[in-house]
Image 1 (cartoon, helix red, strand yellow):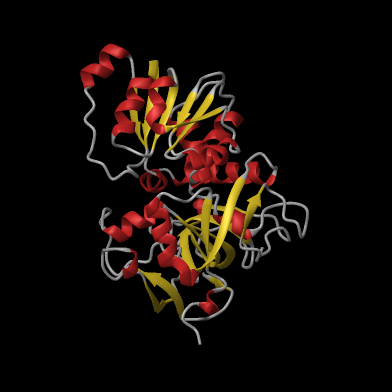
Image 2: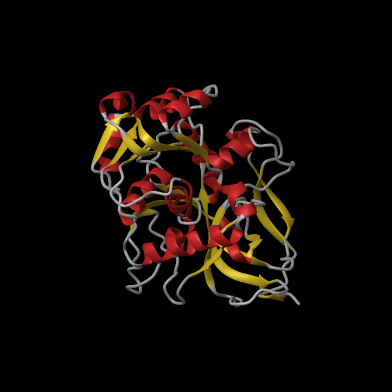
Length: 357
């Protein structure tokens, strides 16, 4: 039996009615989703804004239209589906909504295994618009505010999964991360440290981002076109693609592992010779959070909860900028431009401003 917090039947959402530029994003009134067996629904406070949602909007990922993007949210449990235990209506949570998307809405539904509970009384709204969150809510002294919590499910979870489960990083090994000042890059350097890495180096696309990236756990930060001077690495994480992909393979030490998890450059695919991997003892792995979460929700949920604990204990620095939901078009433009640092989160609970008179 579904237990619900209220009986609304309609909600506001941002939808992709057709593929195209950021301007195609539209406000719509749609039905409030209800959780099925094993699921929960969440009254969304904030939704993370990610490059993945840009790819959905551009049609790079084939999704049914109209489509509600949004791969991660924070908020409070609204309804609990059959067979779900451990969650109660009104409980603050962070959640991955990446499997079916839907986070750019007042209510989102996801598998209960992809939800991390947050401490009661420590997940209030922040309202200040921007700043660093290091696991402490100024209003309470402990835990995570909901804006920070919305920035965790995609990037921080990915960082733990990529380095621990995919790259199998061993203590003392060296790590190179591209786009080190971005959302996931800001977490990969810190998680590498938590997992015992030795040398941790990041690359950025412009000199203006060097100092920003240095604040996220990196020993060194270099411009991407200077990668040939960086030496060799046991693990390289590449979400940029294009020339960076081949350069990443060249930077691998014997028995090194390259993890491919994006193509933010939009460049043509880079062919990798299997014979080269054979002769050089190198490994290339792919990581896609949506596919991983769909196939292994238990493992993805464990990584999310691990990330939430690390953030709440001050072990992860998360730079968050909150933006009103009515600025979603400009938010997508900023993400596409590559000019952002840290993480942008959309203020969904403040959506009375969005299209209301």
